[in-house]
Length: 303
Image (cartoon, rainbow, N blue to C red; front, side, top):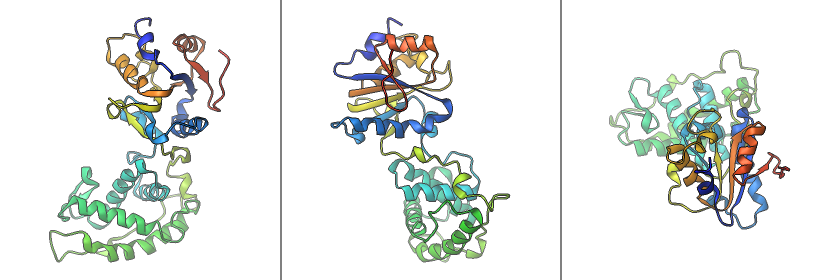
């Protein structure tokens, strides 16, 4: 550890701390970090970042199109994310809405998942994405549609009534490769998920309110060469994984250590390592690096 400790944390004028989190609460970290930075008057949230080694950890910290949700849940999640308006979630909202519309209205055509499920009959993927954004703007303006505290039975009725009309009015800019093509609105079939008609929509889609944050969440590749005000480096929860903080300390010549060095040398003012819950031996390792422990309430702990 002596090889790696000095280069990682020998950072002038940088406040170095660590916070431990429960494995099930990784999603809360970005919002917690944003709130923690409010005590620093000269730190710009947009010039700070949550950094992790891989995209799998990013998906645990913000809503994602990669949840394996059923179509009713996906469109509800997309509407929720779009109405919240957090920039990092908007592409996922477009992706899920594109999938929903392609499946419901363009089932006879093949679609391109990498282009938000743009159907082959649409001449330009950019037209499709613009159309999806317009659809989301329109549908989120419908009275009651963003109230996901409604039960599925009531919410599904609102969506089913409003969706076809909006599509009919807004499809003209799509640019079909077959000029005579138009939506067949009779294809729309939408109802409550089986067994959930009396459940609140918000309780069934896996949405975590604390995910919503303005602070950028990035992989290390997105911040190379940048200087930031504050950084939280998030460890994997899987011990032995290259993204786990203990691997960062094993061998200064290996990739995990290089990741830790690059990520930890980005901030000018505040550096926090977010690590899964630690035992006494692990705590001593982190303190030996010169880090001070803080809890999730933001209070410094006595080392």
